Image 1 (cartoon, helix red, strand yellow):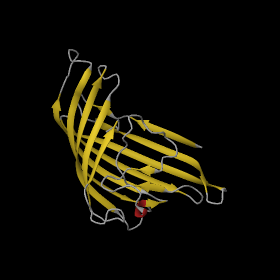
Image 2 (cartoon, rainbow, N blue to C red):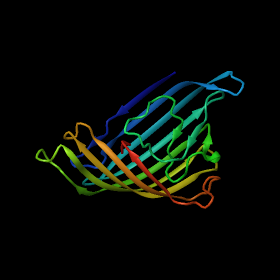
Image 3 (tube, rainbow, N blue to C red):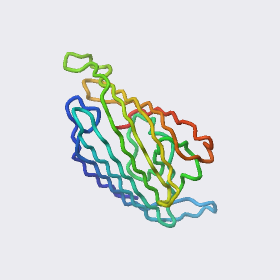
Image 4 (cartoon, helix red, strand yellow):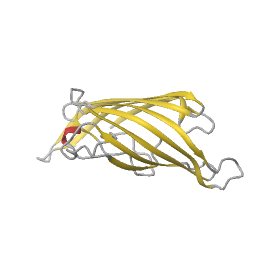
Length: 214
């Protein structure tokens, strides 16, 4: 059971690769139910704040900033950081989303599970090519190709155990029905700065996201 409130005044510029300026703010307040080993159930409160700020630099070049913070109180399920952006073409539900992508780190690492997570990131997004622009273009085809350089830092319990990463992304926008059904493909490489039990050698993390909004 939960309540989600979203404020959005982000505006995308003409031929932009992401919202050019403005912000989106999402606040969640939830009542969580968890099944425990004995077959009983436990209950706990959860709150989440996800703030995204978009700053126009020049032309369609954009600086995207994000601050995510959450807390699961006693009795609620834990948060699991790591893994890559979603590979589903559909948006995830607003309530009970405990898996939060932390680019650069694999999924299922015990060090990335906690009850007081926070994630901070900065992305510099820039255009590479514009394809099939205008009303004379085919209704199915490539729309935009852009790139991004990013730095991301997260912690599962807001303590000294931070996990940082940097990387590069290639984003391809598909134009379906003259943008009636926009679909985005995201191919990224992230380099972790810290080791985990599932990646002790700090190997690069490669990922593909489908339908994941910028």
